[in-house]
Length: 248
Image (cartoon, rainbow, N blue to C red; front, side, top):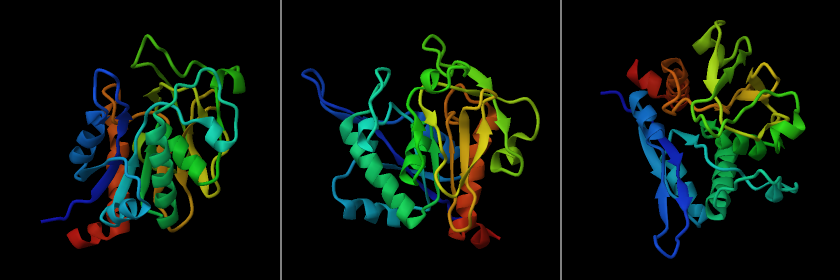
């Protein structure tokens, strides 16, 4: 029986209020997509000790950094835009530590939404903090009235995404106001919206499987073609971890 890759997934955090206890939560699409793609999802809660995080990462074959609310630009030395809707401080502190350890050990990783933004920052890139101001001619990338809002996508030749989508007309879900400005060293842009906004990146050097999409292939608004990105990532993980050879 083929061994399935263990895929870590970070999870979100809601602080306690006077009426409810604090709790962790995760959109089911992340774990469901990993299961459908033949992996085993491993939910990784917030931990304080770096040694504990390292111990968990030792057991994993790959990791998905999930979407969520905004990273705090103050932590990277920038002004916080008034449009920012910040994730909980407890989650962000953990996520940044987690991403740094993933980067240091070059664990295969797929960042989705803010997960891609975090991956890019951790590896040395930066962000546009508010698309309408940084790129005033950009199309809308968020519609508060339509969670299934979509826009076009232009794919880079020779990328993993081209293997998935080919050269047909592509539209993907979109719900963000921050975006990658400069990709981190070693990363290339693999998809843009026609307005120029970066929508996907991929590490283009040997030694690390790392990719990200600003759009969400795990969401209910995603298509069956979008889901293939998860499958492709797990295929890359299997090759990297030797599981593909074991099954041959």
